[in-house]
Image (cartoon, rainbow, N blue to C red):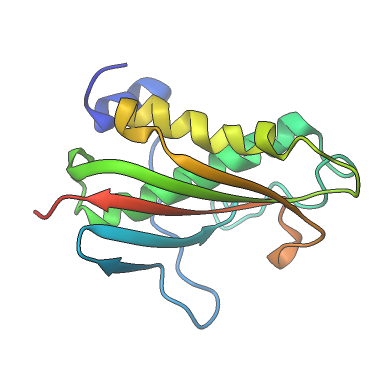
Length: 157
């Protein structure tokens, strides 16, 4: 991959969607200095939720990883809006927090959340390497399979 996040997205065939608007009483992100906390993103695409239900019951682990990747795309869409389209302003993806709606006894949350983690490295290179949580839960909003939030360091314009 090249050093340009925009070029990397193009090589991956990813067209960023418009950032998803909040569906409740919260904001898409908050800022403290150069750190931006991005609210949890769900696997929404063209207004639809293609990944619902429990990983390990209703969808496979591989489908869960695809859901996480879609969450990652939506995180990058939020970052793109913050950066006014200049993703080279990203200093670092600091942390991802991954939540997996899964069956009791399912223990492969890290493999599911890798769908988003791998995407961050594919797009941002070394700046995409981050700390992370991968947590299993019994339910997520709208019965989505995965939700991921992010902490990102973004340079001033």
